[in-house]
Image (cartoon, rainbow, N blue to C red; front, side):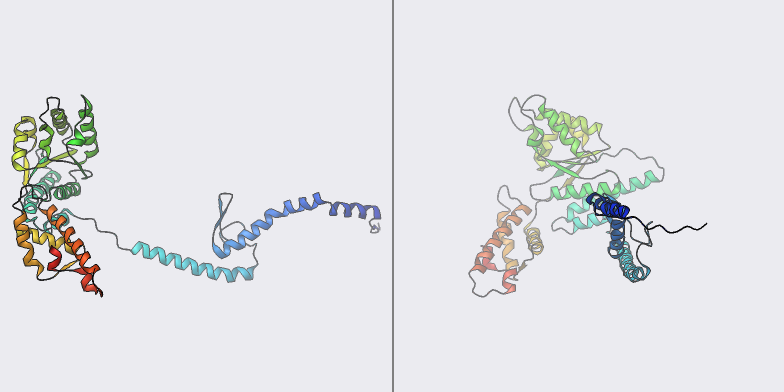
Length: 371
Protein backbone atom coordinates (compact mmCIF):
# COMPACT_ATOMS: atom_id res chain seq x y z
CA UNK A 1 0.00 0.00 0.00
CA UNK A 2 1.36 3.35 -1.03
CA UNK A 3 0.79 6.36 1.14
CA UNK A 4 1.51 9.77 -0.17
CA UNK A 5 2.62 12.47 2.24
CA UNK A 6 -0.12 14.98 2.59
CA UNK A 7 0.85 18.61 2.52
CA UNK A 8 -0.85 20.69 5.21
CA UNK A 9 -3.59 22.78 3.90
CA UNK A 10 -3.49 26.53 4.08
CA UNK A 11 -6.32 26.44 6.57
CA UNK A 12 -4.32 24.20 8.97
CA UNK A 13 -1.26 26.43 8.63
CA UNK A 14 -3.38 29.41 9.45
CA UNK A 15 -4.77 27.71 12.59
CA UNK A 16 -1.25 26.70 13.81
CA UNK A 17 0.09 30.19 13.21
CA UNK A 18 -2.84 31.70 15.06
CA UNK A 19 -2.26 29.43 18.07
CA UNK A 20 1.53 30.01 18.06
CA UNK A 21 1.18 33.76 17.99
CA UNK A 22 -1.53 33.85 20.65
CA UNK A 23 -0.26 35.50 23.93
CA UNK A 24 -1.86 32.85 26.14
CA UNK A 25 -0.01 30.09 24.32
CA UNK A 26 3.30 31.94 24.82
CA UNK A 27 2.48 32.28 28.52
CA UNK A 28 1.66 28.56 28.67
CA UNK A 29 5.08 27.69 27.20
CA UNK A 30 6.86 29.99 29.66
CA UNK A 31 5.05 28.39 32.61
CA UNK A 32 5.88 24.90 31.37
CA UNK A 33 9.58 25.50 30.78
CA UNK A 34 10.27 27.91 33.70
CA UNK A 35 10.83 25.17 36.36
CA UNK A 36 13.34 23.40 34.12
CA UNK A 37 15.14 26.69 33.49
CA UNK A 38 15.26 27.46 37.21
CA UNK A 39 16.66 24.02 37.98
CA UNK A 40 19.38 24.52 35.38
CA UNK A 41 20.31 27.97 36.73
CA UNK A 42 20.29 26.85 40.38
CA UNK A 43 22.33 23.76 39.60
CA UNK A 44 24.95 25.86 37.81
CA UNK A 45 25.02 28.42 40.63
CA UNK A 46 25.40 25.67 43.28
CA UNK A 47 28.34 24.19 41.44
CA UNK A 48 30.12 27.53 41.73
CA UNK A 49 29.04 28.77 45.16
CA UNK A 50 27.61 25.84 47.12
CA UNK A 51 24.07 25.08 48.34
CA UNK A 52 21.28 27.65 48.16
CA UNK A 53 17.74 27.75 49.43
CA UNK A 54 14.54 28.23 47.47
CA UNK A 55 11.14 28.48 49.11
CA UNK A 56 12.83 27.49 52.39
CA UNK A 57 14.26 24.24 50.93
CA UNK A 58 18.01 23.73 50.59
CA UNK A 59 19.03 22.72 47.07
CA UNK A 60 22.20 20.64 47.01
CA UNK A 61 25.07 21.26 44.62
CA UNK A 62 25.43 19.29 41.41
CA UNK A 63 27.08 15.95 42.09
CA UNK A 64 25.05 15.55 45.30
CA UNK A 65 21.48 15.85 44.00
CA UNK A 66 19.11 14.27 41.54
CA UNK A 67 19.79 17.05 39.04
CA UNK A 68 23.30 15.82 38.37
CA UNK A 69 24.13 15.82 34.67
CA UNK A 70 22.22 18.91 33.67
CA UNK A 71 25.49 20.84 33.21
CA UNK A 72 27.76 19.83 30.33
CA UNK A 73 30.60 17.52 31.34
CA UNK A 74 33.43 19.87 30.33
CA UNK A 75 32.18 22.70 32.51
CA UNK A 76 31.52 20.35 35.39
CA UNK A 77 35.12 19.22 35.47
CA UNK A 78 36.46 22.79 35.60
CA UNK A 79 34.07 23.89 38.34
CA UNK A 80 34.51 20.75 40.45
CA UNK A 81 38.21 21.56 40.85
CA UNK A 82 37.36 24.81 42.60
CA UNK A 83 34.73 23.05 44.69
CA UNK A 84 37.30 20.47 45.81
CA UNK A 85 39.73 23.26 46.69
CA UNK A 86 37.04 25.04 48.71
CA UNK A 87 36.12 21.77 50.44
CA UNK A 88 39.74 21.14 51.35
CA UNK A 89 40.01 24.62 52.86
CA UNK A 90 36.83 23.99 54.83
CA UNK A 91 38.18 20.70 56.16
CA UNK A 92 41.45 22.37 57.18
CA UNK A 93 39.51 25.09 58.99
CA UNK A 94 37.45 22.47 60.80
CA UNK A 95 40.58 20.58 61.79
CA UNK A 96 42.10 23.80 63.20
CA UNK A 97 38.95 24.36 65.22
CA UNK A 98 39.06 20.81 66.53
CA UNK A 99 42.72 21.05 67.48
CA UNK A 100 42.28 24.44 69.16
CA UNK A 101 43.27 24.00 72.82
CA UNK A 102 40.31 23.97 75.17
CA UNK A 103 40.22 26.36 78.11
CA UNK A 104 41.50 24.71 81.26
CA UNK A 105 38.94 24.52 84.03
CA UNK A 106 40.27 26.08 87.24
CA UNK A 107 40.92 23.83 90.23
CA UNK A 108 40.37 24.75 93.84
CA UNK A 109 44.16 25.01 94.15
CA UNK A 110 44.11 27.68 91.42
CA UNK A 111 41.52 29.67 93.34
CA UNK A 112 43.46 29.46 96.58
CA UNK A 113 46.63 30.52 94.77
CA UNK A 114 44.70 33.50 93.35
CA UNK A 115 43.72 34.49 96.88
CA UNK A 116 47.23 34.07 98.26
CA UNK A 117 48.63 36.26 95.47
CA UNK A 118 46.52 39.20 96.65
CA UNK A 119 48.37 41.65 98.92
CA UNK A 120 47.49 41.37 102.59
CA UNK A 121 45.58 38.09 102.18
CA UNK A 122 48.23 35.71 103.55
CA UNK A 123 46.55 35.06 106.91
CA UNK A 124 43.05 34.66 105.45
CA UNK A 125 44.37 32.41 102.69
CA UNK A 126 45.94 30.12 105.29
CA UNK A 127 42.67 29.87 107.23
CA UNK A 128 40.69 29.11 104.08
CA UNK A 129 43.25 26.54 102.92
CA UNK A 130 42.88 24.68 106.25
CA UNK A 131 39.11 24.59 105.80
CA UNK A 132 39.33 23.44 102.18
CA UNK A 133 41.83 20.70 103.10
CA UNK A 134 39.33 19.39 105.64
CA UNK A 135 36.49 19.44 103.09
CA UNK A 136 38.60 17.71 100.44
CA UNK A 137 39.51 14.88 102.83
CA UNK A 138 35.85 14.46 103.79
CA UNK A 139 34.92 14.17 100.12
CA UNK A 140 37.59 11.50 99.63
CA UNK A 141 36.32 9.56 102.65
CA UNK A 142 32.80 9.71 101.26
CA UNK A 143 33.94 8.41 97.85
CA UNK A 144 35.85 5.61 99.59
CA UNK A 145 32.70 4.51 101.40
CA UNK A 146 33.51 5.77 104.90
CA UNK A 147 30.87 7.37 107.08
CA UNK A 148 30.96 11.17 106.92
CA UNK A 149 29.20 13.39 109.42
CA UNK A 150 27.11 16.27 108.21
CA UNK A 151 29.29 19.33 107.73
CA UNK A 152 28.04 22.81 108.57
CA UNK A 153 29.66 25.35 106.25
CA UNK A 154 27.86 28.47 107.49
CA UNK A 155 30.70 30.85 108.28
CA UNK A 156 31.37 34.11 110.11
CA UNK A 157 33.72 36.67 108.56
CA UNK A 158 35.04 38.98 111.29
CA UNK A 159 36.90 42.12 110.35
CA UNK A 160 36.67 45.84 109.54
CA UNK A 161 35.50 47.15 106.15
CA UNK A 162 37.86 46.98 103.21
CA UNK A 163 39.71 43.84 104.27
CA UNK A 164 38.55 41.70 101.35
CA UNK A 165 35.60 39.84 102.90
CA UNK A 166 33.47 40.03 99.75
CA UNK A 167 36.36 38.87 97.57
CA UNK A 168 37.04 35.91 99.87
CA UNK A 169 33.32 35.02 99.87
CA UNK A 170 33.38 34.86 96.07
CA UNK A 171 36.44 32.60 96.03
CA UNK A 172 34.98 30.49 98.85
CA UNK A 173 31.82 29.92 96.79
CA UNK A 174 33.82 29.01 93.69
CA UNK A 175 35.90 26.50 95.67
CA UNK A 176 32.78 24.87 97.09
CA UNK A 177 31.40 24.63 93.56
CA UNK A 178 34.60 23.04 92.24
CA UNK A 179 34.60 20.50 95.08
CA UNK A 180 31.00 19.61 94.25
CA UNK A 181 29.71 20.61 97.68
CA UNK A 182 27.55 23.26 96.02
CA UNK A 183 26.12 22.88 92.52
CA UNK A 184 26.76 26.48 91.51
CA UNK A 185 28.87 28.29 94.09
CA UNK A 186 27.59 31.73 93.07
CA UNK A 187 27.41 34.48 95.68
CA UNK A 188 24.39 36.65 96.47
CA UNK A 189 25.45 39.71 98.48
CA UNK A 190 22.79 41.49 100.54
CA UNK A 191 22.42 43.82 103.51
CA UNK A 192 19.53 45.06 105.63
CA UNK A 193 17.52 46.90 102.88
CA UNK A 194 17.27 43.73 100.75
CA UNK A 195 15.83 41.69 103.65
CA UNK A 196 13.66 44.01 105.76
CA UNK A 197 10.12 44.94 104.67
CA UNK A 198 7.88 47.86 105.58
CA UNK A 199 4.87 45.94 106.93
CA UNK A 200 4.05 42.63 108.61
CA UNK A 201 4.69 39.66 106.34
CA UNK A 202 6.75 41.51 103.73
CA UNK A 203 10.05 40.79 105.51
CA UNK A 204 9.55 37.02 105.35
CA UNK A 205 8.72 37.26 101.64
CA UNK A 206 11.77 39.39 100.84
CA UNK A 207 14.09 37.19 102.89
CA UNK A 208 12.74 34.01 101.30
CA UNK A 209 13.15 35.44 97.79
CA UNK A 210 16.77 36.34 98.51
CA UNK A 211 17.44 32.87 99.89
CA UNK A 212 15.82 31.27 96.83
CA UNK A 213 18.22 33.24 94.63
CA UNK A 214 21.16 31.99 96.69
CA UNK A 215 20.25 28.29 96.65
CA UNK A 216 23.13 26.06 95.46
CA UNK A 217 25.44 28.94 96.28
CA UNK A 218 26.46 31.38 99.02
CA UNK A 219 24.34 34.03 100.73
CA UNK A 220 26.65 36.81 101.95
CA UNK A 221 25.07 39.19 104.50
CA UNK A 222 27.27 42.21 105.13
CA UNK A 223 26.91 43.94 108.50
CA UNK A 224 24.43 41.26 109.58
CA UNK A 225 24.06 42.87 113.02
CA UNK A 226 22.17 45.75 111.39
CA UNK A 227 19.19 43.38 111.07
CA UNK A 228 18.44 43.80 114.79
CA UNK A 229 19.92 47.24 115.48
CA UNK A 230 17.05 49.50 114.46
CA UNK A 231 15.93 50.41 117.99
CA UNK A 232 12.35 50.82 116.80
CA UNK A 233 9.51 48.86 118.43
CA UNK A 234 8.02 48.16 115.01
CA UNK A 235 11.25 46.85 113.49
CA UNK A 236 10.93 43.68 111.43
CA UNK A 237 14.58 42.61 111.77
CA UNK A 238 13.84 39.68 114.12
CA UNK A 239 11.35 38.39 111.54
CA UNK A 240 14.14 38.26 108.96
CA UNK A 241 16.44 36.45 111.41
CA UNK A 242 13.77 33.84 112.23
CA UNK A 243 13.11 33.22 108.55
CA UNK A 244 16.84 32.94 107.87
CA UNK A 245 17.38 30.40 110.67
CA UNK A 246 14.54 28.20 109.43
CA UNK A 247 15.73 28.22 105.81
CA UNK A 248 19.34 27.56 106.87
CA UNK A 249 18.14 24.35 108.48
CA UNK A 250 15.74 23.36 105.69
CA UNK A 251 18.26 24.05 102.89
CA UNK A 252 21.46 23.03 104.69
CA UNK A 253 22.55 20.87 101.72
CA UNK A 254 21.97 23.64 99.16
CA UNK A 255 22.91 26.84 100.97
CA UNK A 256 25.94 28.33 102.69
CA UNK A 257 25.37 31.53 104.68
CA UNK A 258 28.17 33.96 105.51
CA UNK A 259 27.58 36.83 107.92
CA UNK A 260 30.21 39.56 108.00
CA UNK A 261 31.10 42.61 110.06
CA UNK A 262 33.11 43.96 112.96
CA UNK A 263 34.07 41.24 115.45
CA UNK A 264 32.47 42.89 118.51
CA UNK A 265 29.22 43.69 116.71
CA UNK A 266 28.97 40.17 115.26
CA UNK A 267 29.46 38.65 118.72
CA UNK A 268 26.68 40.82 120.18
CA UNK A 269 24.40 39.92 117.29
CA UNK A 270 24.91 36.18 117.85
CA UNK A 271 24.23 36.53 121.58
CA UNK A 272 20.79 37.97 120.88
CA UNK A 273 19.69 34.73 119.19
CA UNK A 274 20.94 31.34 120.36
CA UNK A 275 19.43 29.66 117.30
CA UNK A 276 21.56 31.81 115.03
CA UNK A 277 24.71 31.29 117.08
CA UNK A 278 24.41 27.49 116.94
CA UNK A 279 24.18 27.52 113.13
CA UNK A 280 27.67 28.98 112.67
CA UNK A 281 30.54 26.70 113.58
CA UNK A 282 33.31 28.32 111.52
CA UNK A 283 34.84 31.76 111.29
CA UNK A 284 37.53 33.59 109.36
CA UNK A 285 39.27 36.56 110.96
CA UNK A 286 40.28 39.50 108.76
CA UNK A 287 42.89 41.65 110.45
CA UNK A 288 43.23 45.38 109.62
CA UNK A 289 46.03 46.07 107.14
CA UNK A 290 49.22 47.63 108.40
CA UNK A 291 51.01 50.39 106.46
CA UNK A 292 53.29 47.94 104.65
CA UNK A 293 50.35 45.86 103.42
CA UNK A 294 48.55 48.99 102.25
CA UNK A 295 51.61 50.04 100.23
CA UNK A 296 51.58 46.63 98.53
CA UNK A 297 47.87 47.00 97.81
CA UNK A 298 48.51 50.45 96.31
CA UNK A 299 51.29 49.04 94.10
CA UNK A 300 49.01 46.17 93.05
CA UNK A 301 46.21 48.56 92.07
CA UNK A 302 48.66 50.75 90.12
CA UNK A 303 50.07 47.75 88.29
CA UNK A 304 46.58 46.54 87.33
CA UNK A 305 45.87 50.03 85.93
CA UNK A 306 49.21 50.00 84.01
CA UNK A 307 50.90 52.72 86.04
CA UNK A 308 54.44 52.59 87.44
CA UNK A 309 55.73 54.25 90.59
CA UNK A 310 58.88 56.36 90.71
CA UNK A 311 61.35 54.90 93.26
CA UNK A 312 60.94 57.98 95.45
CA UNK A 313 57.19 57.37 95.75
CA UNK A 314 57.36 54.10 97.75
CA UNK A 315 59.00 55.58 100.90
CA UNK A 316 56.42 58.41 100.91
CA UNK A 317 53.40 56.09 100.87
CA UNK A 318 53.96 54.26 104.17
CA UNK A 319 53.69 57.39 106.41
CA UNK A 320 50.52 58.45 104.59
CA UNK A 321 48.83 55.10 105.15
CA UNK A 322 50.09 54.84 108.72
CA UNK A 323 48.53 58.23 109.55
CA UNK A 324 45.22 57.46 107.88
CA UNK A 325 44.77 53.98 109.36
CA UNK A 326 44.61 55.47 112.84
CA UNK A 327 41.48 57.43 111.93
CA UNK A 328 38.05 56.15 112.98
CA UNK A 329 36.23 54.32 110.19
CA UNK A 330 39.38 53.75 108.14
CA UNK A 331 38.49 51.77 105.01
CA UNK A 332 41.72 49.72 104.61
CA UNK A 333 41.91 48.53 100.98
CA UNK A 334 38.99 50.77 100.04
CA UNK A 335 40.99 53.78 101.18
CA UNK A 336 43.99 52.57 99.17
CA UNK A 337 41.83 52.39 96.04
CA UNK A 338 40.21 55.77 96.68
CA UNK A 339 43.59 57.34 97.33
CA UNK A 340 44.99 55.84 94.12
CA UNK A 341 42.15 57.43 92.13
CA UNK A 342 43.03 60.79 93.70
CA UNK A 343 46.71 60.33 92.77
CA UNK A 344 45.75 59.50 89.18
CA UNK A 345 43.75 62.74 89.01
CA UNK A 346 46.80 64.70 90.20
CA UNK A 347 48.95 62.88 87.64
CA UNK A 348 46.56 63.86 84.85
CA UNK A 349 46.63 67.52 85.88
CA UNK A 350 50.42 67.54 85.84
CA UNK A 351 50.69 65.83 82.44
CA UNK A 352 48.13 68.19 80.89
CA UNK A 353 50.45 71.14 81.58
CA UNK A 354 53.48 69.59 79.86
CA UNK A 355 54.50 70.82 76.40
CA UNK A 356 56.21 67.61 75.38
CA UNK A 357 54.83 64.36 76.75
CA UNK A 358 56.75 61.09 76.60
CA UNK A 359 55.37 57.59 77.13
CA UNK A 360 57.18 57.43 80.46
CA UNK A 361 55.37 60.57 81.60
CA UNK A 362 52.03 58.96 80.83
CA UNK A 363 52.65 55.88 82.95
CA UNK A 364 54.88 57.03 85.82
CA UNK A 365 53.54 58.47 89.06
CA UNK A 366 55.84 60.97 90.78
CA UNK A 367 56.04 62.21 94.37
CA UNK A 368 54.29 65.46 93.45
CA UNK A 369 51.24 63.44 92.35
CA UNK A 370 50.71 62.14 95.88
CA UNK A 371 49.25 65.46 96.96
